[in-house]
Image (cartoon, rainbow, N blue to C red):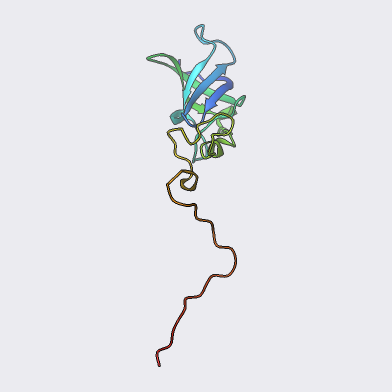
Length: 135
């Protein structure tokens, strides 16, 4: 099964790093193929796929069924990826049902309860230290 298949991304969970691709033609009776973030070919950085994005991939048999490997964009180009993937993982309440403060990925430190009063940035001039002159 090393020939290149084409299809579209059914969904991809950027926080968990996996999703499914719907191949253009069913493969051995399977209408979807598992894809893990580690096999995505992109320009570097955060690896994700956008829902509905056209992709090309090779298929291998994994322990639980068919898995995509060497996932690229059309004609071997970089995948486009989900443009909001990084933001979703940092939103305090998960935004659109993803993660949030209760997820395993911590929100920004200033959004978590620390038991101390929240520190607000000082607006205006920076206070100068008081210097006393000894006589």
